Length: 255
Length: 298
Image (cartoon, rainbow over all chains, first blue to last red; front, side, top):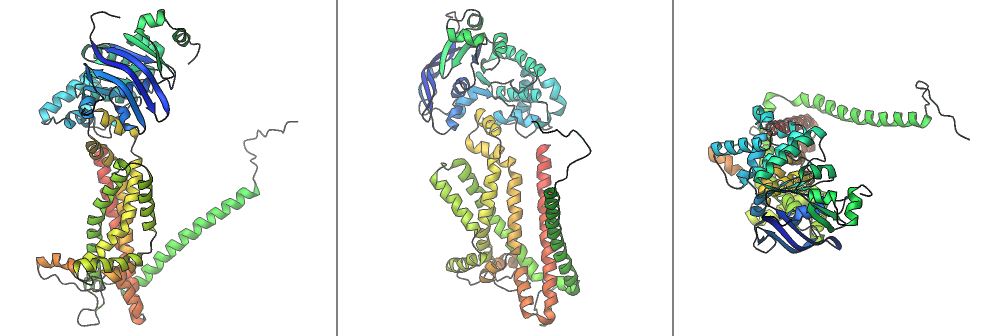
């Protein structure tokens, strides 16, 4: 995988502990710019933990300790002095369960831009519209922008959350099993959306669903009990796994 | 050997214990309803006797002496409610936010929480005793509405803190993650996502507090005093009133009841006015809560 692709995020010897529990062991992984990288593995293998450490969401968990380097465009994000608010603006996140705020659709999308100091109705209107178009949900909600976001279906809510994430113009979008709470039709819509998202953004996604990983991702990393077992182009990893454990997992022998 | 399975849908087996329990539960419910209704009806009937427009529109014991009324006490009670809430709500909500969002969860927060719970169980007369001494040293007046209100503020703080804390704890983690994940600073998240989601809980604590303030008497006799006058000659009086003595409705009720005899009926009238006041305040609070909720759900 040494083509002329640039690296967006690079992790070096990352170890993560929850108290005494060694949850991530020596992870070295490069996430490529404008590609979709999928993290797969059985429950509790550390894939979500790893994803969340990419924009320091683990900071919120007491007793969580991290060593090693996370480089975003070559800059370490865990050194003192890093403003996590600015970091999370550049690396946005979409969660497993759709979590729109209990506000109107418009206010949900405008939330991030307002946090970062964007004022003025015309400016916000434009951002809201562009973000909703970008998340392929504009046509479904354009007539009820000032209705509660909680009145939408689960699939629409998740696309609202994607729109909310891209409204702050991040460089990377992290997705933590974004379709696991959704029906197949909504899942398909979000998978289609991800393909257009990677034109503008670098996407990292955790998924339980191996078919999903093969359908959408360019690269896949396989995690097992805190270790990254194998990382390769998706088609290579699924057709010619190098490690026995990867093979056992993707052929359904465990997990 | 297997037991026979009963497949009938109609021949339900009735157990004696079921019936006994059902009867007991219905009896308890009936007793509670009967007691509440009985008390309200008793107060309404006895209270109507002395209730008149004159009773509502004159202060008690004003010259000539045989005047009976509660105007001054209604106003004093409203003063106490407003000032107490103005003082206690921001402090209580602030403390709750600190304890749940900022304080490191550990022994210190557990001690603070235990202390607030203990505070809630202290008899109100002890608050009164403390308030009268403590605030006397600050304001150098024996009795004043402000002293009473500040004493009541200390008294209702535990209620506000605990109820608000519970409300904050029920805010879904998803809302917090969503906000933090967009790069919002913590205080911004609390202000825009956490507090709006627990406005119901905060209002509940306010309603509970109003109940305690309006119903309080022991703590007030020592602090706010027993005066029942109604003197608003100038706009300045609206503000200076705060530093004057002012007996609440409950204190006035106590006085009428203590004199007994022909004045006993006025004690019941005061009780009726109290009931109605609490009812009106609670309805207002519910209306406010309803409007806020409606505005939020868009």
